[in-house]
Amino acid sequence: MRENSESLFKSARQIIPGGVNSPVRAYKAVGGTPPFICRGEGAFLFDADQNRYLDYIGSWGPMILGQAHPDVVKAVAEAAAKGTSFGAPCPQEIELARLIVDAYPHVEKIRMVSSGTEATMSAIRLARGFTGREKIIKFSGCYHGHADSLLVQAGSGAATLGVPSSPGIPKKLAEQTLTASYNSLDEVQQLVDEHENQIACIILEPIAGNMGCVPPEPGFLQGLRELATANAIVLIIDEVMTGFRVAWGGAQDLYGVNGDLVCLGKIIGGGLPVGAFGGREDIMSLLAPEGPVYQAGTLSGNPLAMCAGIRTLELVRDMSVYPLLEKKGRLLEAGITPYLEKYSDRLCLQRVGSMFCLYFTPGPVRSFNDALLCDTRAFSRYFHAMLQKGFMLPPSQFEANFISLAHSDRELERTVLAIGESLREIFSV
Ligand code: HOZ
Image (cartoon, rainbow, N blue to C red; front, top):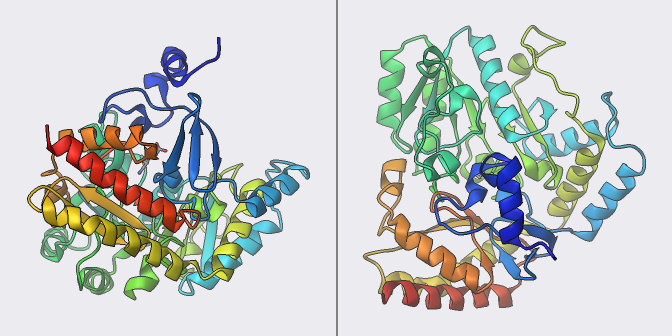
Protein backbone atom coordinates (compact mmCIF):
# COMPACT_ATOMS: atom_id res chain seq x y z
CA MET A 1 0.00 0.00 0.00
CA ARG A 2 1.25 3.45 -0.86
CA GLU A 3 2.20 5.51 2.19
CA ASN A 4 0.27 8.75 2.82
CA SER A 5 0.85 11.55 5.32
CA GLU A 6 -1.41 9.86 7.86
CA SER A 7 0.49 6.56 7.76
CA LEU A 8 3.85 8.31 7.58
CA PHE A 9 3.00 10.40 10.66
CA LYS A 10 1.97 7.26 12.48
CA SER A 11 5.28 5.55 11.64
CA ALA A 12 7.24 8.68 12.48
CA ARG A 13 5.61 8.97 15.90
CA GLN A 14 6.79 5.48 16.76
CA ILE A 15 10.43 6.33 16.26
CA ILE A 16 10.80 10.14 16.38
CA PRO A 17 9.50 12.15 19.40
CA GLY A 18 6.20 13.66 18.36
CA GLY A 19 6.80 12.31 14.85
CA VAL A 20 8.85 15.38 13.90
CA ASN A 21 12.38 16.69 14.07
CA SER A 22 11.27 20.21 14.98
CA PRO A 23 8.19 20.84 17.14
CA VAL A 24 6.18 23.43 15.14
CA ARG A 25 5.85 20.93 12.27
CA ALA A 26 3.76 18.54 14.38
CA TYR A 27 0.64 20.75 13.90
CA LYS A 28 0.03 20.66 17.65
CA ALA A 29 -1.14 24.27 17.64
CA VAL A 30 -3.55 23.87 14.74
CA GLY A 31 -4.47 20.19 15.06
CA GLY A 32 -4.49 17.51 12.37
CA THR A 33 -1.81 15.62 10.54
CA PRO A 34 1.11 17.47 8.97
CA PRO A 35 1.40 16.80 5.26
CA PHE A 36 4.66 14.96 4.56
CA ILE A 37 6.42 16.86 1.81
CA CYS A 38 7.99 14.81 -0.95
CA ARG A 39 9.01 17.51 -3.38
CA GLY A 40 9.25 21.25 -3.93
CA GLU A 41 9.35 23.18 -7.16
CA GLY A 42 9.28 26.96 -7.51
CA ALA A 43 6.51 28.31 -5.30
CA PHE A 44 4.94 24.89 -4.73
CA LEU A 45 5.24 21.94 -2.37
CA PHE A 46 3.90 18.45 -3.12
CA ASP A 47 2.93 16.04 -0.37
CA ALA A 48 2.65 12.26 -0.03
CA ASP A 49 -1.11 12.52 -0.67
CA GLN A 50 -0.69 13.99 -4.15
CA ASN A 51 -1.67 17.49 -3.03
CA ARG A 52 -0.01 20.60 -4.33
CA TYR A 53 0.36 23.64 -2.08
CA LEU A 54 1.46 27.21 -2.65
CA ASP A 55 4.32 27.51 -0.17
CA TYR A 56 4.25 30.38 2.32
CA ILE A 57 6.66 28.70 4.77
CA GLY A 58 9.63 28.91 2.42
CA SER A 59 11.61 26.74 4.87
CA TRP A 60 11.09 29.60 7.35
CA GLY A 61 12.76 32.17 5.15
CA PRO A 62 15.63 30.95 3.00
CA MET A 63 13.76 29.87 -0.13
CA ILE A 64 13.81 33.39 -1.55
CA LEU A 65 14.24 32.03 -5.10
CA GLY A 66 11.62 29.32 -4.60
CA GLN A 67 12.21 25.58 -4.26
CA ALA A 68 14.75 23.70 -6.38
CA HIS A 69 15.97 26.67 -8.40
CA PRO A 70 17.79 24.99 -11.35
CA ASP A 71 21.02 26.98 -10.89
CA VAL A 72 21.20 26.15 -7.20
CA VAL A 73 20.44 22.47 -7.85
CA LYS A 74 23.21 22.44 -10.46
CA ALA A 75 25.68 24.04 -8.06
CA VAL A 76 24.88 21.46 -5.37
CA ALA A 77 25.05 18.53 -7.78
CA GLU A 78 28.41 19.65 -9.15
CA ALA A 79 29.77 20.13 -5.64
CA ALA A 80 28.44 16.74 -4.47
CA ALA A 81 30.22 15.02 -7.33
CA LYS A 82 33.47 16.36 -5.90
CA GLY A 83 32.87 15.17 -2.33
CA THR A 84 30.27 15.98 0.30
CA SER A 85 32.33 16.78 3.40
CA PHE A 86 36.03 17.26 4.01
CA GLY A 87 36.47 18.42 7.58
CA ALA A 88 39.17 20.64 6.09
CA PRO A 89 39.13 24.15 4.61
CA CYS A 90 37.72 24.56 1.09
CA PRO A 91 38.04 27.57 -1.26
CA GLN A 92 34.29 28.17 -1.41
CA GLU A 93 34.26 29.27 2.25
CA ILE A 94 36.22 32.37 1.29
CA GLU A 95 33.93 33.10 -1.65
CA LEU A 96 30.79 32.94 0.47
CA ALA A 97 32.42 34.98 3.24
CA ARG A 98 33.28 37.68 0.67
CA LEU A 99 29.69 37.80 -0.60
CA ILE A 100 28.43 38.26 2.94
CA VAL A 101 30.94 40.97 3.74
CA ASP A 102 29.98 42.73 0.50
CA ALA A 103 26.40 42.90 1.81
CA TYR A 104 27.39 43.74 5.39
CA PRO A 105 30.39 46.06 5.07
CA HIS A 106 30.62 46.53 8.85
CA VAL A 107 31.32 42.80 9.20
CA GLU A 108 35.08 42.55 9.28
CA LYS A 109 35.37 38.84 9.95
CA ILE A 110 32.90 36.01 9.70
CA ARG A 111 32.73 32.38 10.72
CA MET A 112 30.53 29.72 9.11
CA VAL A 113 28.56 27.30 11.24
CA SER A 114 25.77 24.85 10.42
CA SER A 115 22.61 26.49 11.79
CA GLY A 116 21.15 29.69 13.16
CA THR A 117 21.15 28.14 16.62
CA GLU A 118 24.89 27.61 16.42
CA ALA A 119 25.40 31.14 15.18
CA THR A 120 23.53 32.82 18.04
CA MET A 121 24.92 30.46 20.67
CA SER A 122 28.47 31.13 19.50
CA ALA A 123 27.94 34.88 19.20
CA ILE A 124 26.76 35.00 22.80
CA ARG A 125 29.74 32.99 24.03
CA LEU A 126 31.98 35.37 22.13
CA ALA A 127 30.26 38.44 23.60
CA ARG A 128 30.69 36.98 27.08
CA GLY A 129 34.34 36.21 26.39
CA PHE A 130 34.94 39.69 25.00
CA THR A 131 33.29 41.63 27.81
CA GLY A 132 34.06 39.29 30.70
CA ARG A 133 30.41 39.68 31.70
CA GLU A 134 27.76 36.99 31.98
CA LYS A 135 24.28 38.46 31.69
CA ILE A 136 22.48 38.89 28.41
CA ILE A 137 19.35 40.77 27.41
CA LYS A 138 16.86 39.29 24.98
CA PHE A 139 13.31 40.25 24.08
CA SER A 140 10.25 38.19 24.91
CA GLY A 141 8.82 36.61 21.79
CA CYS A 142 12.15 36.74 19.97
CA TYR A 143 13.54 33.34 19.14
CA HIS A 144 17.22 32.76 18.53
CA GLY A 145 17.35 28.99 18.30
CA HIS A 146 17.32 26.55 21.15
CA ALA A 147 20.60 27.12 23.01
CA ASP A 148 20.15 27.09 26.80
CA SER A 149 20.61 30.82 27.40
CA LEU A 150 18.08 31.67 24.73
CA LEU A 151 15.08 29.53 25.62
CA VAL A 152 13.77 32.09 28.05
CA GLN A 153 10.55 33.85 27.02
CA ALA A 154 11.18 32.53 23.50
CA GLY A 155 8.96 32.88 20.45
CA SER A 156 8.45 30.42 17.58
CA GLY A 157 7.73 26.82 18.64
CA ALA A 158 8.20 27.66 22.30
CA ALA A 159 5.44 30.28 22.07
CA THR A 160 3.33 28.03 19.86
CA LEU A 161 3.41 25.23 22.40
CA GLY A 162 3.02 27.64 25.31
CA VAL A 163 6.36 26.65 26.90
CA PRO A 164 8.47 29.76 26.40
CA SER A 165 10.97 28.62 29.04
CA SER A 166 12.09 24.99 28.81
CA PRO A 167 12.83 22.48 31.55
CA GLY A 168 16.38 21.12 31.36
CA ILE A 169 18.00 24.51 31.50
CA PRO A 170 20.06 25.09 34.66
CA LYS A 171 18.43 27.74 36.81
CA LYS A 172 21.74 29.50 37.25
CA LEU A 173 22.08 29.87 33.50
CA ALA A 174 18.48 31.00 32.95
CA GLU A 175 19.06 33.67 35.60
CA GLN A 176 21.73 35.18 33.39
CA THR A 177 19.14 35.88 30.68
CA LEU A 178 17.18 39.07 31.27
CA THR A 179 14.14 39.84 29.16
CA ALA A 180 12.52 43.04 27.99
CA SER A 181 9.46 43.76 25.86
CA TYR A 182 10.15 44.19 22.17
CA ASN A 183 10.05 47.85 21.16
CA SER A 184 10.48 49.04 24.75
CA LEU A 185 13.70 50.98 25.13
CA ASP A 186 12.67 51.99 28.64
CA GLU A 187 12.68 48.40 29.82
CA VAL A 188 16.13 47.82 28.35
CA GLN A 189 17.44 50.99 29.97
CA GLN A 190 16.06 49.82 33.30
CA LEU A 191 17.77 46.41 33.00
CA VAL A 192 21.06 48.05 32.04
CA ASP A 193 20.81 50.40 35.05
CA GLU A 194 19.88 47.59 37.43
CA HIS A 195 22.76 45.39 36.24
CA GLU A 196 25.47 47.95 35.67
CA ASN A 197 28.63 46.52 34.07
CA GLN A 198 27.15 43.01 34.07
CA ILE A 199 25.51 42.83 30.63
CA ALA A 200 27.60 41.13 27.96
CA CYS A 201 25.19 41.57 25.08
CA ILE A 202 21.77 42.54 23.83
CA ILE A 203 20.46 40.13 21.20
CA LEU A 204 17.41 40.74 19.05
CA GLU A 205 15.64 40.02 15.80
CA PRO A 206 15.60 43.38 14.00
CA ILE A 207 12.17 42.42 12.66
CA ALA A 208 10.67 39.86 15.00
CA GLY A 209 9.62 36.95 12.79
CA ASN A 210 9.11 34.38 15.50
CA MET A 211 6.04 36.07 16.93
CA GLY A 212 4.54 36.78 13.51
CA CYS A 213 6.01 39.87 11.92
CA VAL A 214 6.78 42.72 14.29
CA PRO A 215 8.82 45.58 12.84
CA PRO A 216 10.96 47.77 15.06
CA GLU A 217 9.32 51.08 15.89
CA PRO A 218 11.13 54.19 14.70
CA GLY A 219 14.10 54.84 16.97
CA PHE A 220 14.06 51.41 18.66
CA LEU A 221 17.11 49.95 16.90
CA GLN A 222 18.94 53.28 17.03
CA GLY A 223 18.19 53.55 20.75
CA LEU A 224 19.56 50.05 21.38
CA ARG A 225 22.66 50.90 19.40
CA GLU A 226 23.29 53.99 21.53
CA LEU A 227 22.58 52.19 24.77
CA ALA A 228 24.90 49.34 23.85
CA THR A 229 27.73 51.67 22.84
CA ALA A 230 27.35 53.84 25.95
CA ASN A 231 27.55 50.80 28.22
CA ALA A 232 30.17 48.75 26.33
CA ILE A 233 27.58 46.07 25.62
CA VAL A 234 27.88 43.95 22.46
CA LEU A 235 24.84 44.41 20.22
CA ILE A 236 24.02 41.14 18.44
CA ILE A 237 21.58 41.47 15.56
CA ASP A 238 20.06 38.13 14.69
CA GLU A 239 19.33 38.24 10.98
CA VAL A 240 18.72 34.51 10.60
CA MET A 241 15.31 35.37 9.11
CA THR A 242 15.85 38.88 7.79
CA GLY A 243 19.38 38.65 6.37
CA PHE A 244 19.32 38.81 2.55
CA ARG A 245 15.51 38.61 2.89
CA VAL A 246 14.44 42.20 3.46
CA ALA A 247 17.42 43.85 1.71
CA TRP A 248 20.83 42.84 0.39
CA GLY A 249 22.30 44.14 3.65
CA GLY A 250 19.39 42.78 5.70
CA ALA A 251 17.42 44.74 8.27
CA GLN A 252 20.56 46.57 9.34
CA ASP A 253 20.75 48.13 5.91
CA LEU A 254 17.00 48.74 5.79
CA TYR A 255 16.96 50.61 9.10
CA GLY A 256 20.49 52.02 9.00
CA VAL A 257 21.69 50.47 12.25
CA ASN A 258 24.69 48.15 12.61
CA GLY A 259 25.22 45.51 15.25
CA ASP A 260 28.63 44.63 16.65
CA LEU A 261 27.92 41.06 15.69
CA VAL A 262 25.43 39.69 13.17
CA CYS A 263 24.00 36.18 12.98
CA LEU A 264 22.88 34.69 9.70
CA GLY A 265 21.08 31.47 8.86
CA LYS A 266 19.97 29.09 6.19
CA ILE A 267 19.48 31.67 3.42
CA ILE A 268 23.29 31.91 3.05
CA GLY A 269 23.26 28.19 2.27
CA GLY A 270 20.41 28.43 -0.22
CA GLY A 271 18.32 26.42 2.25
CA LEU A 272 21.04 23.93 3.15
CA PRO A 273 22.12 23.69 6.80
CA VAL A 274 24.29 26.78 7.24
CA GLY A 275 24.64 29.66 9.63
CA ALA A 276 27.28 32.27 10.26
CA PHE A 277 28.22 34.93 12.74
CA GLY A 278 30.49 37.83 12.12
CA GLY A 279 31.28 41.41 12.99
CA ARG A 280 33.94 43.61 14.55
CA GLU A 281 37.49 42.41 14.09
CA ASP A 282 38.43 43.06 17.73
CA ILE A 283 35.61 40.79 18.89
CA MET A 284 35.92 38.11 16.20
CA SER A 285 39.67 37.77 16.72
CA LEU A 286 39.00 36.32 20.16
CA LEU A 287 37.71 33.16 18.47
CA ALA A 288 39.85 30.02 18.50
CA PRO A 289 42.37 29.44 17.03
CA GLU A 290 43.18 33.16 16.94
CA GLY A 291 41.95 33.69 20.47
CA PRO A 292 40.75 31.72 23.48
CA VAL A 293 36.96 31.56 22.87
CA TYR A 294 36.30 28.06 21.59
CA GLN A 295 33.93 27.21 18.78
CA ALA A 296 34.21 24.46 16.16
CA GLY A 297 32.33 22.12 13.78
CA THR A 298 33.14 19.41 11.24
CA LEU A 299 30.28 20.51 8.99
CA SER A 300 31.14 24.21 9.25
CA GLY A 301 31.96 25.48 5.77
CA ASN A 302 30.58 22.30 4.20
CA PRO A 303 31.32 22.39 0.44
CA LEU A 304 27.75 21.58 -0.67
CA ALA A 305 26.26 24.23 1.56
CA MET A 306 28.88 26.80 0.52
CA CYS A 307 28.19 26.20 -3.19
CA ALA A 308 24.41 26.41 -2.74
CA GLY A 309 24.85 29.61 -0.75
CA ILE A 310 27.22 31.23 -3.23
CA ARG A 311 24.88 30.55 -6.16
CA THR A 312 21.83 31.74 -4.23
CA LEU A 313 23.44 34.98 -3.10
CA GLU A 314 24.87 35.65 -6.57
CA LEU A 315 21.40 35.29 -8.09
CA VAL A 316 19.84 37.45 -5.39
CA ARG A 317 22.49 40.14 -5.93
CA ASP A 318 22.24 40.11 -9.73
CA MET A 319 18.47 39.99 -10.09
CA SER A 320 17.62 43.08 -7.96
CA VAL A 321 15.10 40.98 -6.10
CA TYR A 322 14.09 43.41 -3.37
CA PRO A 323 11.93 45.79 -5.41
CA LEU A 324 10.30 42.73 -6.98
CA LEU A 325 9.59 41.16 -3.61
CA GLU A 326 8.24 44.45 -2.28
CA LYS A 327 5.89 44.63 -5.27
CA LYS A 328 4.64 41.14 -4.57
CA GLY A 329 4.18 41.91 -0.89
CA ARG A 330 2.26 45.07 -1.77
CA LEU A 331 0.03 43.22 -4.20
CA LEU A 332 -0.90 40.73 -1.52
CA GLU A 333 -1.44 43.45 1.09
CA ALA A 334 -3.60 45.54 -1.24
CA GLY A 335 -5.73 42.49 -1.99
CA ILE A 336 -6.21 41.68 1.67
CA THR A 337 -6.93 45.28 2.75
CA PRO A 338 -10.69 45.13 2.10
CA TYR A 339 -10.94 42.10 4.43
CA LEU A 340 -8.90 43.92 7.04
CA GLU A 341 -11.40 46.77 6.84
CA LYS A 342 -14.37 44.41 6.99
CA TYR A 343 -12.99 42.49 9.99
CA SER A 344 -11.08 45.36 11.57
CA ASP A 345 -12.16 44.31 15.07
CA ARG A 346 -10.58 40.87 14.59
CA LEU A 347 -7.64 41.11 12.21
CA CYS A 348 -4.55 43.04 11.31
CA LEU A 349 -1.76 42.51 8.81
CA GLN A 350 1.88 43.35 9.45
CA ARG A 351 4.38 43.18 6.63
CA VAL A 352 7.96 44.12 5.84
CA GLY A 353 8.75 43.39 2.18
CA SER A 354 8.20 39.69 1.59
CA MET A 355 7.67 38.80 5.28
CA PHE A 356 4.18 39.14 6.68
CA CYS A 357 1.71 37.92 9.28
CA LEU A 358 -2.07 38.02 9.36
CA TYR A 359 -2.85 38.37 13.06
CA PHE A 360 -6.17 37.39 14.55
CA THR A 361 -6.25 40.45 16.76
CA PRO A 362 -7.03 44.05 15.76
CA GLY A 363 -3.47 45.00 16.68
CA PRO A 364 -1.16 46.66 16.20
CA VAL A 365 1.21 43.98 17.44
CA ARG A 366 4.28 45.71 18.85
CA SER A 367 5.37 43.10 21.39
CA PHE A 368 4.87 39.52 22.49
CA ASN A 369 2.12 40.56 24.91
CA ASP A 370 0.23 42.05 21.96
CA ALA A 371 0.75 38.84 19.95
CA LEU A 372 -0.62 36.80 22.83
CA LEU A 373 -3.95 38.62 22.43
CA CYS A 374 -4.52 36.74 19.15
CA ASP A 375 -7.48 34.43 18.81
CA THR A 376 -5.40 31.31 18.11
CA ARG A 377 -8.53 29.16 17.72
CA ALA A 378 -9.74 31.36 14.87
CA PHE A 379 -6.23 31.18 13.42
CA SER A 380 -6.36 27.35 13.47
CA ARG A 381 -9.68 27.34 11.62
CA TYR A 382 -8.29 29.81 9.10
CA PHE A 383 -5.11 27.74 8.72
CA HIS A 384 -7.08 24.59 7.87
CA ALA A 385 -9.42 26.44 5.52
CA MET A 386 -6.34 27.66 3.63
CA LEU A 387 -4.65 24.26 3.68
CA GLN A 388 -7.72 22.65 2.17
CA LYS A 389 -7.59 25.16 -0.64
CA GLY A 390 -3.95 24.32 -1.35
CA PHE A 391 -2.07 27.01 0.61
CA MET A 392 0.71 25.94 2.97
CA LEU A 393 0.95 28.53 5.75
CA PRO A 394 3.16 28.22 8.83
CA PRO A 395 1.13 26.11 11.28
CA SER A 396 1.25 28.72 14.02
CA GLN A 397 0.00 32.23 14.62
CA PHE A 398 3.45 33.10 15.94
CA GLU A 399 5.45 32.67 12.74
CA ALA A 400 6.13 34.86 9.72
CA ASN A 401 4.93 33.93 6.21
CA PHE A 402 7.36 34.31 3.32
CA ILE A 403 6.83 35.19 -0.33
CA SER A 404 9.45 34.04 -2.85
CA LEU A 405 10.40 35.31 -6.27
CA ALA A 406 8.69 32.23 -7.68
CA HIS A 407 5.28 33.40 -6.39
CA SER A 408 3.68 34.77 -9.55
CA ASP A 409 1.19 37.63 -9.44
CA ARG A 410 -1.48 35.17 -10.50
CA GLU A 411 -0.73 32.95 -7.52
CA LEU A 412 -0.78 35.95 -5.21
CA GLU A 413 -4.19 36.95 -6.58
CA ARG A 414 -5.38 33.38 -6.03
CA THR A 415 -4.11 33.65 -2.45
CA VAL A 416 -6.11 36.83 -1.88
CA LEU A 417 -9.31 35.14 -3.05
CA ALA A 418 -8.63 32.10 -0.86
CA ILE A 419 -7.98 34.29 2.18
CA GLY A 420 -11.28 36.10 1.59
CA GLU A 421 -13.18 32.83 1.26
CA SER A 422 -11.48 31.31 4.30
CA LEU A 423 -12.27 34.33 6.45
CA ARG A 424 -15.91 34.25 5.37
CA GLU A 425 -16.07 30.55 6.23
CA ILE A 426 -14.55 30.87 9.67
CA PHE A 427 -16.26 34.09 10.73
CA SER A 428 -19.72 33.09 9.55
CA VAL A 429 -19.90 30.10 11.94
N1 HOZ B 1 11.49 27.47 14.71
C1 HOZ B 1 11.34 27.48 13.31
C2 HOZ B 1 10.56 28.64 12.81
N2 HOZ B 1 10.78 29.85 13.41
C3 HOZ B 1 10.69 26.23 12.82
C4 HOZ B 1 11.69 25.23 12.48
C5 HOZ B 1 11.14 24.07 11.68
O1 HOZ B 1 10.22 23.41 12.12
O2 HOZ B 1 11.66 23.84 10.62
